[in-house]
Length: 449
Image (tube, rainbow, N blue to C red; front, side, top):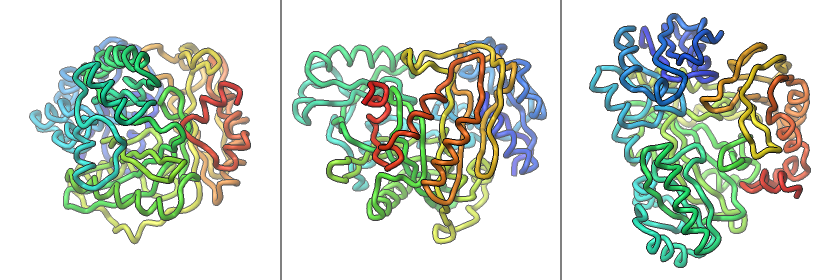
């Protein structure tokens, strides 16, 4: 195991990694921007290095500053968390050339699976179903129109290097396709420095189901079940649960097989998530992408499996074997996670930076809070607006929903608007309670349906 690790991230995921490292006896070096300097969670790290001004581009995305911090701190490895540099093949290559271990998959795997067109080709080659669409990068409007006419509207325009819901647009006709391509390209260029797009058929009634995999450096690979991430706003996840209430046991088994097959095909190492869309009309599933990192929603998998994913990442990166086989993994109960954002759902989910004047978290049996926020904390305007995650774990889905209803009503955050009222509305909706959810559920709820 490593003796010292640098955490190239911030907020709740940085705190999450600090805690896992402490329990493994690993020293931590936390980096921070000027905006985060003095944040209380940094006090739990063994040391802290300020890496730049408030903007992410000059701090958390500043590769030279992060590598310099790692070198002067004499760390053996860097954990990228999620977001920022977590899926950057360039950053992984720089770590390797600096003799620092990148806690994640190889740069080659990041490059292959980070490009959505290449990942799609890997899936096709390994008999994992994909949505009809472009075989590679779309080079112009006419090609895009030809593809859309072939697969049929509506279609989804997606950034090849995308993630986090950015660079994605839905087109229902020729005019919206042409205009949406320009918007998606500009967004992709800004977010990922890559304007490349591809197109796939959009399924209007679908569920978003993903499979968590873990793989060590010795060829061992397991899955830890699935998560249903259908409840989204603007293609970004809002609430997740495991197991999915939307699929049958047969679909579940086939999804697991497909996910493991795909991960093996690219010699995957560390934690990763293979994401699928399940068509509610015919039950078919389709590969959409692989997230080559720890996911925001990883706690619900931890709750039902009893496996600490961050500790497993550290063990795998340090060369250890997985300590179990697939048959030894048991998944117990139901876990649900609400991502609590400082956003105003009634105003287009506009971010709400500002001072948290009061903060009280819920507790009780089966309740977990992953957050770095506290009373008096100033939510900066420079980064993702997530305050934290409320996770519940109970024996049945009915019990988990009841626990979540109670916990959300206990959660008190004042000074900024949050998504808590929307979460309460979601989990009290009869369709959610009955497990009748899809990727358009939140949009329908917001429109009064």
